[in-house]
Image 1 (spheres, rainbow, N blue to C red):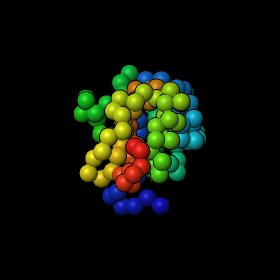
Image 2: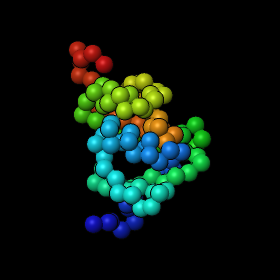
Image 3: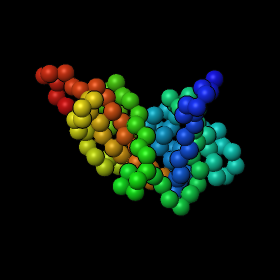
Image 4: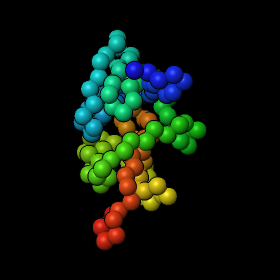
Length: 124
């Protein structure tokens, strides 16, 4: 149930709607419901949302908000992102809350994935 005055839905612009759908289905197992040729919605992926066909996409260097996913297995998720056609633009790095990487999905949006800090003795 939606919560009063809390983030409820996110919409991403996509330079290539079909490629965005293929990427998120392949890398993360998301499914979509099409609403005409220019919009596809996803649900129950941590937050509901959708992709719309556009001539621009979100990048942090342009001031866009950064959507960050969580992973229990950061390196494995990075491999899935690459195998699905994502472009890693910031390899895994440490930050005060753990580790993360940034990637571009084929529709042009920059997202990130974070995970817990590696345990001592683990190979990052």
